[in-house]
Length: 149
Image (cartoon, rainbow, N blue to C red):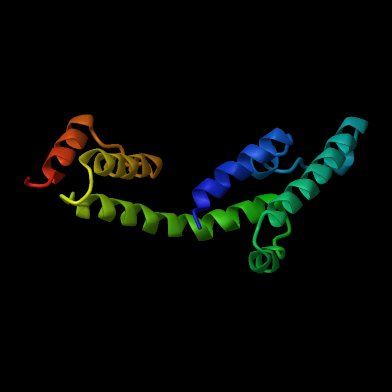
């Protein structure tokens, strides 16, 4: 559920642990001809960060997903695989939120204020899905959705 939220939280966590670079960057290449002390240390640091990052991500998943995604060899491969799978589902949620907004109608049995708050929540969800709505359109939509009474 809500991959985008999980992804943001996980990225924040990885950033606080100084590991976010592992899912964003490529691993350092080892050149056997020029293996300096610094290169060896950089590779060892990367491998440790890679191990921690991959396992932090796996441990944040549900057990059923853990079994599936534990086959990924690197944190970056795991991250990209999850993104590829669940970003598609997010496209469906964007369509769902748009549909909820378009179909929303106000009723006489509830207070106008609480119903406007519901519409504003839908608008916030649209914004979080990347759908920017002009303020004039928002006001017009709210007015249009007002009950006839």
